[in-house]
Image (cartoon, rainbow, N blue to C red):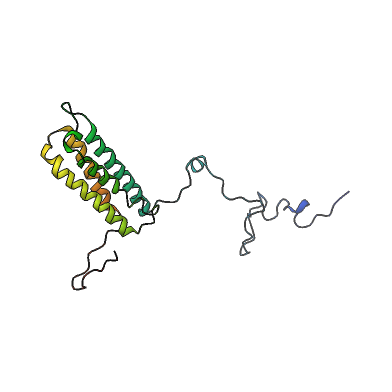
Length: 191
């Protein structure tokens, strides 16, 4: 039984010497013809081993990098402040001499995380920065009163790292108000 073959050959595929067949000298649609699109069932370009191994993640924005940096610096501030207060040096630790001021330093270090926690506590960026600024101020006050006079000790170096990390976390945090241009009048605050 012979089936009639049209110009496309049996089953609709081009026959030998017809356009689109290997060896015919012509690949694809006729010149000047419209683009037909990908063949049915085409799923896109195959992925390579390297592309599949790399996780697809959106590029990080400057805000997310700042958020991560604030978390990191804030946690370093807390850890270094606590270590500087609790590590023994020459038979006693800083808690013996600073007493409640050590609590002020730890609280200040914790407050430097306010910009990173602003969304959790429904705080505006400016308010979170103000809270973190108060925490950094407490760290600097503690550093000047108790760490600077004993700057030669090892624990003072650790506490200095904690204070510096807290101040840097506040410095890079969003919400810091820009200074007003000269002649624009005083800035109004909504406290």
